[in-house]
Image 1 (spheres, rainbow, N blue to C red):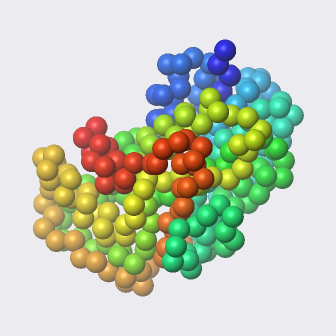
Image 2: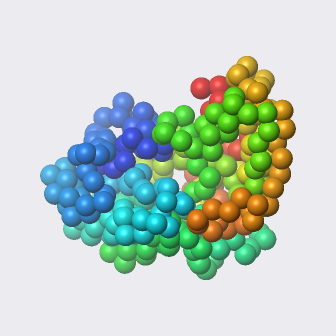
Image 3: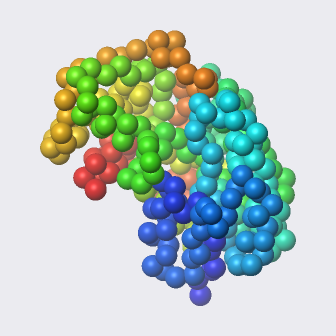
Length: 289
């Protein structure tokens, strides 16, 4: 018999993909605002007590990295306090909590992929609030699966890097993109499919932090060039002629970002018994869809 799943944040990039995978299997309750509001964390308790799930998936987050610098309390409520409440309620029910976190818990001073055991040191309000959420889960819920991912884009959601580049590429001949921040672009659908593969394996032994991104590395500049190359082949209407690499100081943002945030996916690959698809392959499939 399949376990009762409560999916929170079913309208986001990953949440929407998870809904499409899990709902046809039955036993999944997908909820989002206004039914549940992570900015009012205490409303979470009544929803969880009403549905009594065996698995809680938190795919909701405050993800506006730069805006968080001017809205630290709101970002903390959603990313820091709410996951702690989910963890407390999961613990009372004996439920398993799956939570999505971020590469931005690291400072980017490494030159090799970050392992789950490496020291965290977030540079931004966003990264700090996500770390507070991780710590709250670890403190309150014995059975948890924290999945750190990075550079997420997808078919759903209002805006992401791929959608922004396609919009700018249709409007402008020249686009300047940061070339000195390195990471792994990750398709929301691949994250959702990894979580769906993890669900049948859930048991107390797998509790902990895991990293999952598409394989391969890129700068934002590399990613932008690849988006335009792939989109051109698929016949997207593009005006862009030149992509100019620039440095982080040439494109100042309110939030500081790690210059290197590649994550090691060895631990999750061993659990799933396969490696995540390469980011370029994932990008091609996403654009086709």
